[in-house]
Image (tube, rainbow, N blue to C red):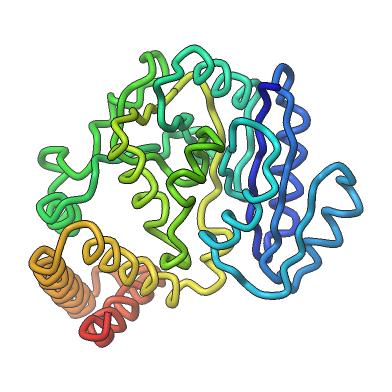
Length: 306
């Protein structure tokens, strides 16, 4: 048996997850698979819609929102195949994408995990992998210094579709293929991360085993992004940085954690001052700027408790 258990966790993404499921069935041709979908107590009828259209899907309708990490772990407990594919519900699988990932993994058994080229809905590249987060890289990212010299990100050319698979530190959590056995040897996702940074932590655990993580541009998916989290954007913005701090505390030590919080404080002040200057000059009063200003104020207010 050489198939894949596709794990999907949904929350109020009814039509989007239906499109995702259709794309899997339409575009997977050579790989035996099962789909295990855990619905995190959606209120939009997701579970009923999936049950009606896809009888073959192993559906778990959770009465509680277990979060992304917890939901994936509960669903993965039912995996019957040697591979698990951790797939976001807001994705569209392109023709042969899953087949390509499984075939490459079969030919490179030393791998720890594998991820595809991820595209935006307009077909443009979506960053599909990152270097491992460090204090310097996070500071570099927060002050947008990758525009000067890539450090917190890989150069755009790194993701070129014509390139062979490349070794990376962290794969985008929207789509990760790995061995089921390894997933459980590493205890799956750390459920201390409700959402965000759980894939960064998992990739760190994989690299610690000496196994390689690879980005495979020959496999392509579309990732809509933010379809669940966008429904509660302010809280998810805080959750993003709450879990980044949690990752630093777990993986980088107390000193780096304190310094990282200092970076967040400085970057937040910088953004708020920039927004204030733009408003005074009447250069930008867009809804996006208003939203970001509100979110960074909330981050500053809550940083001491994170």
